[in-house]
Image (cartoon, rainbow, N blue to C red; front, top):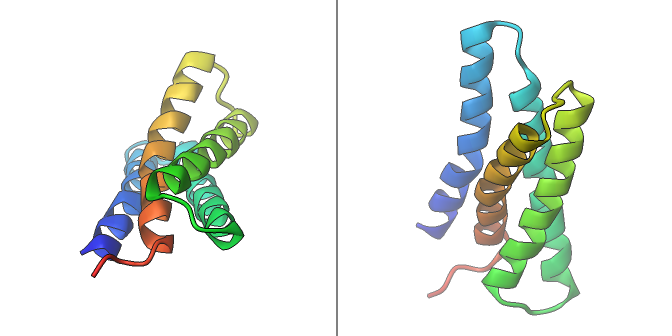
Length: 110
């Protein structure tokens, strides 16, 4: 159940980006930002998990910070210029991808 929830949370930003691209036909920025955020969150969570035991909350925080920073950079480099909207999207994607990464790298409780 934990892994399935992780996959669902990771898919939400990607689905949002894909929906935006399907609606506009040209706006692929959200899709790229979601993919970069997800990759950064998983990489950060795996690195944090390998460095030593920590709580799932700590893994979530580390993954979310990495996803927010890389998502914001990705959004800016693909053309987003309004700082408020850029940070809102990056933080929203980071919450989903950070939770996804924290759920997928931690062993399931038995």
